[in-house]
Length: 486
Image 1: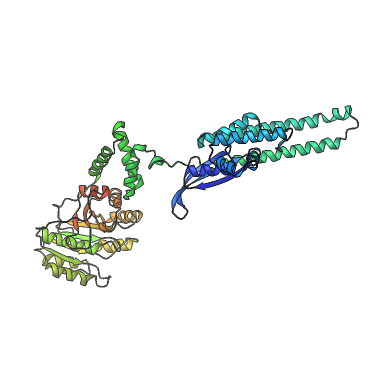
Image 2: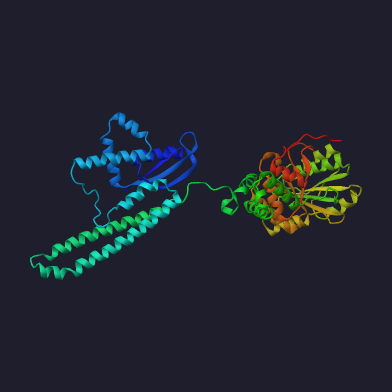
């Protein structure tokens, strides 16, 4: 038996290659779809593994030798059935002209029956799953049959040896032993070949047809598009499956086939599960904390501009960042632009003085150095420099949507020990995947405060709303929109 692999851009081309090289009676062992690039074009490809017995291949080669060039060209355009009939016709004629049929197999005990040949000819039309099941069952039965025949042959030679020697005194016992050993060796060789063949079948992929999105998670085909859409915008796979499993149980089966209805249900579910901070609840102190490069200072300045310009509030800008070079000076310039007080807090005792001097200020916005809270010392240092609770205090955890999901969720988990109030997300204009907002929000349980959607101040600042989150996940509108300010 000869086994070969063929790769082509389409299934039709691959089957033509099998028919051309191995003949119309080749057995399809496996077929799979390669998503990796094929050739220079980068498109996908189809790979087929096929096998053909030596007898069938010899018949094909014999028929090709008898063909003229014109006949060979027309032969290539024939269907598989027509090619097979032509090959059988040529082989039958050759056998009649050249005497009795020659034995073309070296398997003395396991011969290929007519029934097996018929199975070989029909297996090309089977599905991959049915084909593999058929071959595996047939191979197992052949192994058992061969083992039984080997046992019978062994007993025959051993048990019958004395009787044969008694009835034929001139027969040499060593000749019978040599014949027995030779035939048993052939049987063992055949058994080993069958074992290897079965092992190779176990390694062949069961199907080349790709499943619909979410099939591995147990989701039906009708919800595959929604699974692909949610995971495509960055929503965590686990939460996506939870949402769609619930949709599967609550939506009637006929309605699952209507995409617009499924989308509407998911949007309503998201609206019900998202929690935001009320814009009306404004404590006196606002602390902006988070890791490095998350946009804390920019978020503070944008929020200060929002309070001064849109809410007509009196604010003061405070910094506790004495580590970053130029951080205090940068905030001082912004405070001058907004015409608001600016202060630097270097120790916890400064808060009492600040509270008295800025008694007429509605809100104090405090900037802190980057802190990932990796150690207990980091957490303790930040906690001692937090503003007093008197008058109300909100601690805003600032997080960029460009961060990795696992990192953002870990930072949120660490900051929960400081009783963080809510989440501010920045950099929304720098990505098309906003699923991290929903993931961190649901994992941490912290409500959403606001969004930074660009570098402009105060234009690129939004107070968070449930509708805006759904808008971002479903790509209903652009991230940045034109606005009119009073």
